[in-house]
Length: 392
Image 1 (cartoon, rainbow, N blue to C red):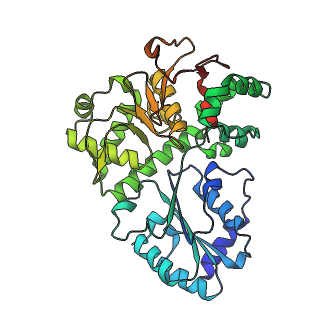
Image 2 (cartoon, one colour; image 1 turned 90 degrees about the vertical axis):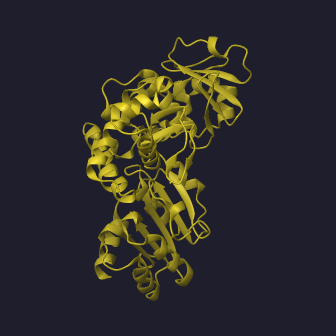
Image 3 (cartoon, rainbow, N blue to C red; image 1 turned 120 degrees about the vertical axis):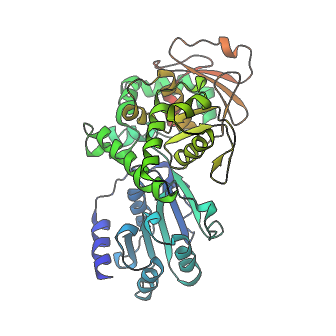
């Protein structure tokens, strides 16, 4: 325990950013058991420290542990720490612990202590032998929005915008923002290195770090959680490269399976794993029992930065749509649309394109909008793409 306390004190002594990610403001701090899930590298460990600070406890009342660095079971640690007056146990990388769901249930039921934990987004919590849904509140931390990137990189802190605010008042909002900085210049930085907060460790090595993180997700988390052999992981890696260079509207599942040299059913399983690991986003298709049941409408990499490390021949249309989906999915329902590109919340139709994109495909369609890249301000129902980076 002394070793864990020493490491915990080092963790809490680290500098903590003042700026808080969007998820912090959604957390119910009264809950006894809180889970923060998300892709490696999105900032879960820092968020845990900010959550801990919210409770304003003495350092002796808090213990941080990483599940890949313990010898006792989680419940044994919780019982011992509680006996010495501990009130808050923070567990990082919960997916590295043996029988973590059962351990958390035991702690919840029998130990008078609050637990906050983080884990891989690939965790199969819904299929766990122990149902944690009645005990724990789960939150998913996504990649940085353009708004969050501006706050962390340039200390430009702007308020979140609702979708309705953007649709109804985008021109005035964009003009107001233009007075503070050049949105297209800063948006180009975001496209290059803005989706993960570790750009603060150095922008030149950003893609190398992102590539390392992706490999850890595949070789460690996906391989372990889904019991996938190393040779199959290489096939999944090949699939990611194929998806990176494909055009969503031309996506052909049969050809994709053939190019990856796998069966259609195996392809659907692999797509499920990648979706759960937050490496891709699937529009359409239904999931059941770790399987994708039918053909997805469109598939994108999870965020725009992943295209920089997975292929050099990516399509600009894919990047634009990937960004739009990544920003929209946090608070809204995104569906494929036969008219335009996407239907949002079963109400709005969006067509995504470059600065010269017109209204031909959505002409006379109610509640329809053109979202254009490479423009600073829009007019009427034509809105700049970058502005959707302020949704969270």
